[in-house]
Image (cartoon, rainbow, N blue to C red; front, side, top):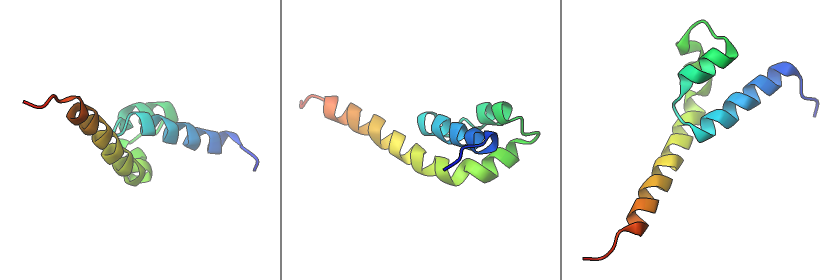
Length: 69
């Protein structure tokens, strides 16, 4: 697979949103999209799953750390 600059931009945005689900504004600025909606249209469906995964990770880490009363 050949990686060209346009593909690398999308891959970078994907990796960033995996770590920071929902932070579309940062991605919009990095990709230089004029409208936030453009960024959200392209990445929102991916970010929704990562957001759920991130929520589960945070919730379960707190739950497992809870001591029985």
